[in-house]
Image (tube, rainbow, N blue to C red; front, side, top):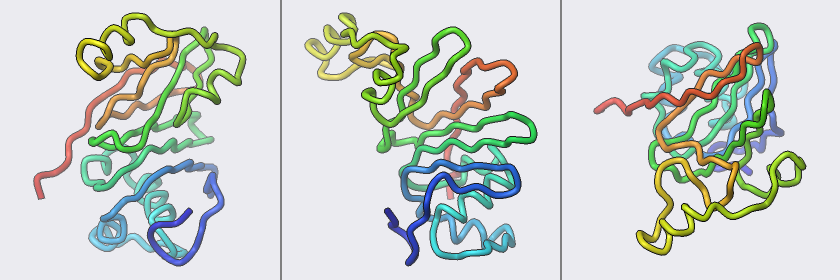
Length: 173
């Protein structure tokens, strides 16, 4: 899949001990690279540009990103993972935490296929749908699976895997 540029990228994109798995479209990635004087080896698309922005700035670049996206960016040297979802929540991102195991996916089915989560409905979420036509907060219709909230990110250490979501805001420009 490619929305920007003329090249499809195999994912995950990996370089120098950093790995990016990206789903979406960053409409201003080329502009951000130019503003910050970043040279992207292959200007074929927003995947390579996002990689360079995260490689250089980490989470401080998040408020400047415009578009629809979810991504996981892994630093093998420090065992640190950055996970983020756009502010509109266009691209889904679900997760589950079981003991010291965390699974992320854009849909629930792969989480069930792991065998770690039983396919069971969340009765409170179903009640919310019937009453309000949506599910509140980070709940999903399945027990044990959470929805990564819109406009949030987390920095997750593999040495101490604990999810603490933090909000980011777009710059007003």
